[in-house]
Length: 590
Image (cartoon, rainbow, N blue to C red; front, side):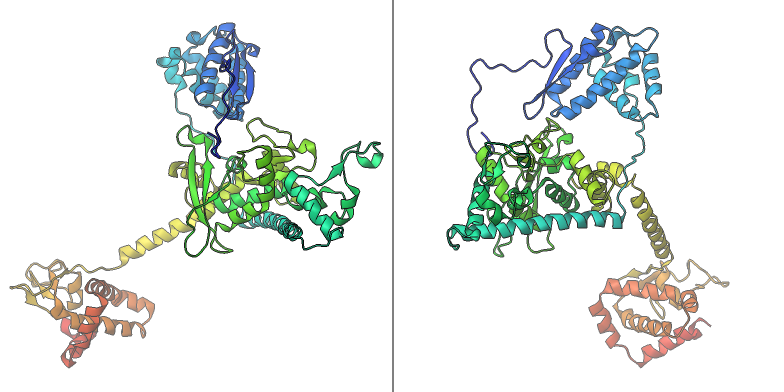
């Protein structure tokens, strides 16, 4: 069944699945997820024929089991070609896998170490060769499986101001396109409601927009005698529509209801900035569906299907829910994207039923829809889908907002700095590939680490309550001015005569002390008095003489609770105030 519920057509009766490894064993046909085939001729490798066949066999197995795009198989073939060239340069090249030696593998690793792309060569070849049963175990297999330290990433996040320039440029371009499409959509609706007098300029514009919305193009004719002004006989806009539309250019005709390629790229940049999607996800993004029950408030919640091909079979698909509940919500961009592409998607649905891609744009020139990769969605009529790296590079360069495609560095900026959490990756991948190698993250971490160390030091210096908090007195305990003592004769700080040498203010920091509700009133008054004392002392004197006592009392207040603490404070009498005066003056320690 197709995505829209239509039954797929059956293949012809004589249909057979094409062979991946062609007769002869040296040509591999890789069929990608779109059903398109790319062939790789291993007879071109400068190695023995048996080695060519062995390399083709492990390559073909990957094409069947793991690789779904031609980009991956093409990269793999490049790695294989470099490995074959290395083998051919040896004094005695191996004839097949079983003739590979540990010394050859070490020499291969040394030849590629430190070179551009060398790490990828080693990883790919090591993985491919170990797929063969002859290299699945043994000394050569162990050498191929040796762990290699990946090179430091050279991709860095954008600076805050630089990234803001890119996002603002994309937002302005996409907003202008959305306003244009909405204005023309409103005119079209008025024409369909027969609000214009037939034959007027407004009526003709509405008729042309209706044709554009249904077919994807304005009414045209083919000139019988091409002139230099007709661009070699290309179909021209009918004369009756030129004045209502304001000319013949694409900007005032075909793009009235559709995004251009540049505007689609601007939308892609906003999707990257808002959700952290990479270019491949945006390229194949499906149309989000509003959930059946948007809630009583009427705000739509969209379920966004996402595909992450590198996760491997079984883990490629996930969904995200976002809600549009206002201009600042993360679901508003989805609403705007659906509005900007609705006419294009409607035409595409007529031409190619079941196509459900979100980022669709109208090509101005027919050549603009030519695919640069068989892995990308195929164009439908004059409409193309998604964004390719070359177009993204041209977009950023033409606007002067960045050098190179903004998507790779932009996604690092969003995921490593703005989100500070995994987007479509695992936590390990997020930390290893996005956060830890990024210089801006490292710079920010200095402040975080310093603040953490300072906080830890402060906490270590802050005195906490050590005395045991009890609900009632314990028989045999000795009462003191601030607590009860469970073992007066064994003080942790004995005086010269063997008795306790601590001040009564230090009782709350002693393991022998026990505090019960009978002490709460006096201690609450002491806590309040120390707070008043703080306002008249210098910070140095306060920290030296009173900070630890105040911290222990605050800790006790937290354990008792504000309600009980304030109630105890309200029950204090004159005797309690006199006792506090003696404690603060030091007279009780004499």
